[in-house]
Amino acid sequence: MKDPQCKKCIRINEKLFLKGEKCYSAKCPLARKASSRTFKKRGSKHARKGLSEYGLQVREKQKIKLIYGIEERQISNYVKEVKRKKGDDRSAKLYEFLEMRLDNVVFRLGFFDSRKKARQVVSHNHIMINNRPVNIPSYRVKIGVIISIRPQSLSKGIFKDLDIKIKKYNPPAWIKLEKDKKTGEIVGTPLLSADPGVGQSLNSIIEFYSR
Image 1 (tube, one colour):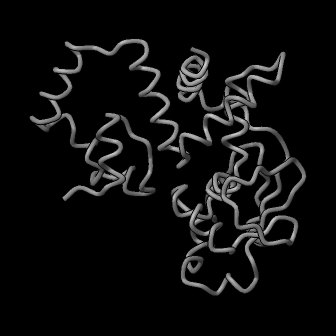
Image 2: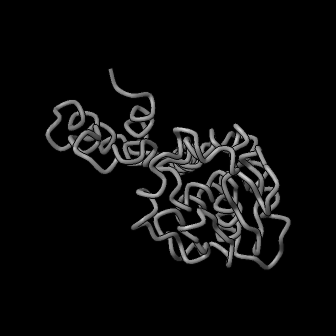
């Protein structure tokens, strides 16, 4: 039986990196796609049928929801907020909103290999912002804040291999990671240009909600 997270990637027919290390290994179902008769038949069927512009927009919206682990209401509210900001690059601003979520920041710090795990850790009150516990995954961090792990949580099993995980890890440029202290500081703004694969998806999402 395939993992539920893997089924999401199969349904989108694209790697969404929802399972951490498994997504980079030969165990990933999509890694075996080329030699699978089922996938070949499914792929050729979709290639003949094609998708409408609306269908593509829905697909890209679903993809972003799965990647960031957010609900329809949340992404709809993000787009509404983006559209109120005149003069800004809407796709870039939407990307900033998604990346500055606390659960995503914990993931980007390299503390965990999937956003799902990072989201669970935040929800269980293991993460602090400026030395104050915050258990809201969607909390939007700001430049200058310090993200850390609650001292009493460091002895828990979920953090036992953290030193090994972050030893060779390099976070994105907008996060400063203090590996010895296991803390991160937001020093800039996430740039969509650093993640070009997401740009078209965000454009499609904004177009979807502008209909």
